[in-house]
Image 1 (cartoon, one colour):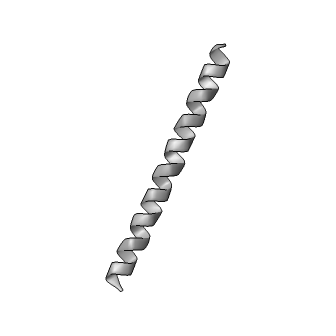
Image 2 (image 1 turned 90 degrees about the vertical axis):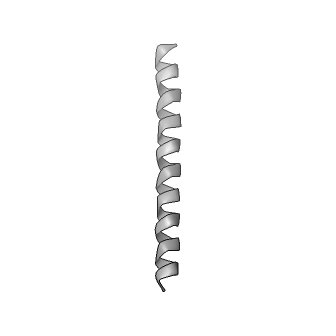
Image 3 (image 1 turned 60 degrees about the vertical axis):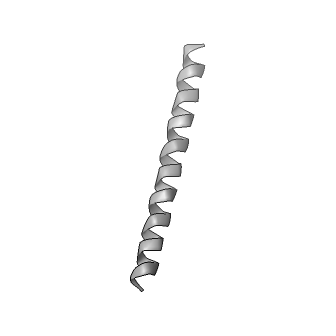
Length: 36
């Protein structure tokens, strides 16, 4: 049971990391578009 909880927590963290990375990527593209 403890192992399953750790796995879910890891998946949630990985998902949050991807969301953060995608948000940064989108904001970078937006800044580049604004500069042009």
